[in-house]
Image (cartoon, rainbow, N blue to C red; front, side):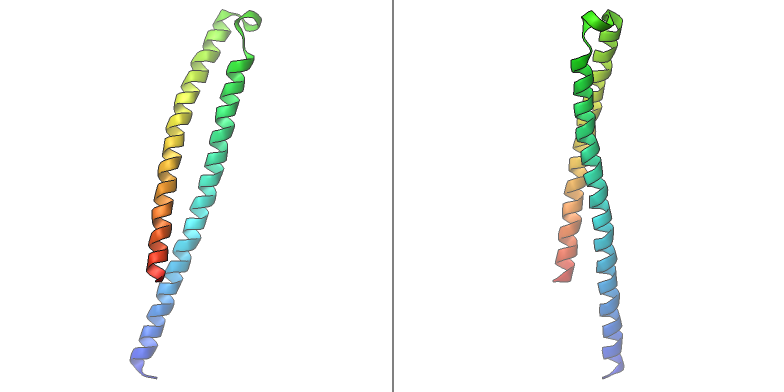
Length: 104
């Protein structure tokens, strides 16, 4: 065993640690994205329930109009948030592919 072999072994170990830490970071990010996705679904259903439950006959026209404005604005925010989450998932998939390619 030469000094070069020892140095190469330490480089391989360092590269392995980098891959492990990158993979751990990727798993943390994916867990965060799953929670964001779940929150997105809850938000959409909550806004839908708000809009379905408030009717003009029971709450009055001002409350009904306010619920519609809040509901539609909430749906716009939910769609933008959903597009952001999809974008983050594609970044996560690219990062995962990069990690797999670095292992090969």
